[in-house]
Amino acid sequence: MNYASDDKSAEEALNELNTGGNYARTIKADVSDQQQVNEMIDGIVRETGRIDILVNNAGIIKDGLLMLMPDSNWHRVIEVNLNGVYYTSRAVLRTMIGSRWGRIINIISPSALLGRAGQTNYSAAKGGVLSFTKSLARESARFGITVNAVSPGVIATGLTRYMDERVKTEFLSMIPAGRFGTPEEVAHAVLFLASDEAAYITGEYISVDGGLT
Image 1: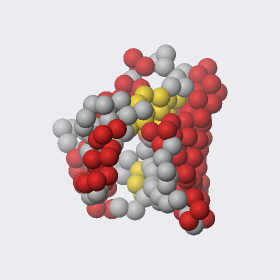
Image 2: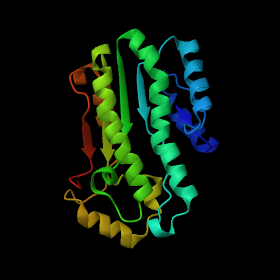
Image 3: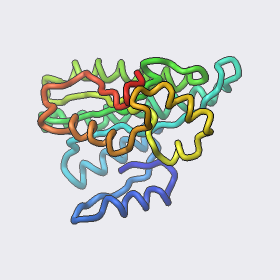
Image 4: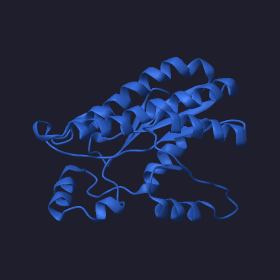
């Protein structure tokens, strides 16, 4: 499990993962930095011999109307949310091609499909990831590698707990299921795409959003 800066949350997640005989560990690296990504992936391959599954879940938000958006906010969101997917995917492809098996699963957003005012940077990045997914799927299929995306809607996480009640009400009115999703519901979609049962699915995306899109 890779993380960029939040040591406390990473430790809590690691403790949760390392239960019931499981073994997990964390690696601190910024996915927007190509050198850090390459060092991270090379280290994992040296230790384990291969990488089978990559889930590109890193993402940041720096919302604002385009006319008022600082260039730094545009570039930072693109660097993490889009360039990060490029760096990590390219870094794992060599070992996946050598194994003739692999799963790359990219986490996108309804903003990639619908757009959202105040999120031109985020929507552009996530829309780019969706197109990237479809193109890489075509390149990689002959090596037994699938590349797909999962698009979570509004998910009940720490972020939504601090969401303004007016914004919560607005989102709920747009979701036919009438509720926010759970992290577990997103995880089940990712697990399916990572499994042998999804071997003939590539270049696709699954929306886990209660009908939002």
